[in-house]
Image (cartoon, rainbow, N blue to C red; front, side, top):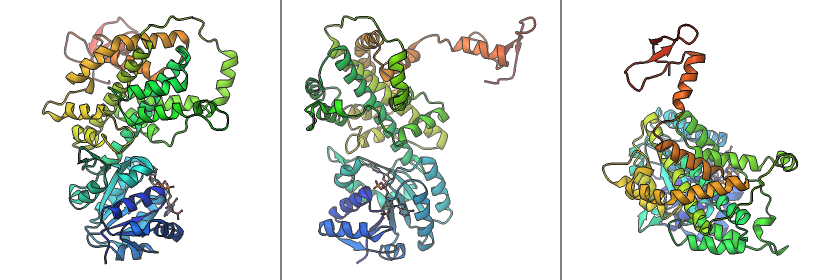
Length: 478
Ligand code: NBP
């Protein structure tokens, strides 16, 4: 018996993907650097399907049908290069090496180019949904050659999450496209969680609504426009009571948020591409600020807080819901805008409707909204920005008055809402007829002769600021 796929790296993600493959009828060859994990998996779950136990990479390779498919699920970074280095000499042209970990897309581009020289396919696959998703059906974002997808795609589609029967898996694009899209997914996830946090803080600190009561509000919100996995689990966490103290669970957790790095990667990449992903950036910075515990303690003693007593509008809870919806929409719009910028930069033909469709189930940002986003990009005339799609232009317009009221209340009360407010600034920045960027250009021309364009004439100009202030035509140095 030969296996249709081999998995090397059997920690939680690799083990669960291997089980998912076996449960779906594939024969799976198993390998891990240390044999204990392989044996633990076989003894606990060996009866779930057809597995082949292997002790070395040579045995793993020998157990596979051709062209071989080897899924690497080891720790991202140097371990992936190490495993690729050991695997490549054992493989033959046409074989497919798959990296399903959270690798940086630039690493994936580098690895794909190196393996292509040896006539091997390298497929960087973004996998979202955590441990449970890996086992029961994740959202899968494969990059690599189109040819490799012909061989690998049907297997991935079979184990993927399904939305209305449609697999949440489709070929994303060449080389690092799959890992790039997964990275942006994670960036949006950061923003999604931050806006939920800001809504919670406002309801608690401005309106005095306790976590148990808020759990009911979030459950209610989960039945409408905001319906999503993250809103659902927010209700669960807010409703949870700490067994040791009887306090709301959220009150016994240290308020410093961790991060593993994909949010930061998204922001760095946004900066490289000149793509304004402010909602994601503010979310990453909010986590960083939360972790500056020493400075926060000093600040509580030394920095002046807000004094104003603010009368809340009667509609405050609904206002917060609308501000959350509008800010969330902006974070998706920015993430999608960044996908467009990356497609141009890296030569990918990203299909935004398909990407939105495979985020509808299995992944952490799964939400009703994604079905509408998919539809917004499904026609031949894709909007230049998600917010311009008629359905969203209308729904965000309806939310704007409440959004402004909420940001205004937060500012007066000294409650930080970095994503609510920066998303509103993005919205206003986009729609504003004249931006102060004109003044910025004037300043840059004065101190650095960086030149400017005029609103009323073609060409590039410079003013002789240090001389007679005459305007001259110049070479564009923007
Ligand atoms: P880990 O990231 O904890 O890695 C552990 C695995 O890597 C073990 O199998 C270990 O072998 C192996 N390994 C290491 Br460490 N160094 C190695 C090396 N030099 N050579 C060969 N094997 C090596 O596993 P995980 O938590 O299952 O995550 C796997 C990937 O999936 C990561 O990229 C992670 O970021 C990603 N991930 C994704 C999600 C998601 O929701 N999509 C969630 C969690 C993780 P050993 O047993 O011999 O030490």
